[in-house]
Length: 281
Image (cartoon, rainbow, N blue to C red; front, side):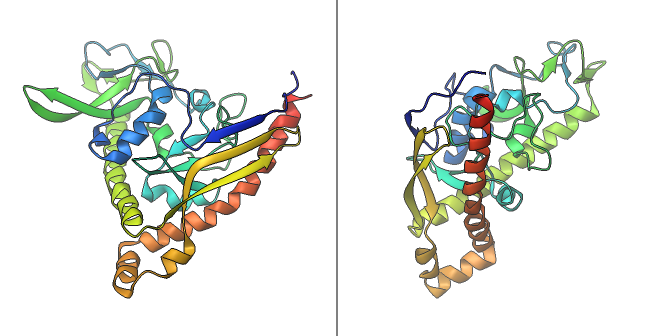
């Protein structure tokens, strides 16, 4: 493999390769509109599920996450904070619509947790949005009425016509499809809860912008900017009524998970150096 060229690189927290905007059904909330920005790479061409059109479509067994290998941030829901905090930094990205994400790499086109064979790094938590693929809930407007429809990303590498589990059998949904539909619905509900938490952070002016500069062993300098964290001093200074509300609603626990997760920045640095060293060999 060729050597990595040392250069200064400025990276923003929400930078991802862009494609067509896809709006998830929970996109009725600002958080999901932000989620759709990351989905631009994850979701290629979503079609409402149809027993006739998709009669021959199969979903590959196992989990090949190659489709996420270029994503260095992944949207999170609040329920994921605890498992995520054990492996990745949790930061808040976005300008107008701030949302929590897991930071998976320091370089904008690099996910340090997808192996060369497409497997996720063993023992590490896999974000729900990736486990939901290749399905997604989207807005379905018919006859002037808003609805929710489960869609299939027909161009996903997880979709096949030769291998995998069928989506429909004799025109009826399979158990796999029913399971994924429930998973997608639960995920969308959690996104709404996440929006409430983020709004509470904003209302109490707890989110502060941060920037960090990292130098890799190759000499490449990365200025990582455009992200926010919860300010611990501001959190401690909440009035008693607000602090009690944070405790009762579980937001204090989410903030704690966020604080603990930031200790994974050093691990990312180590993983990134290991990746650079391997590329230079």
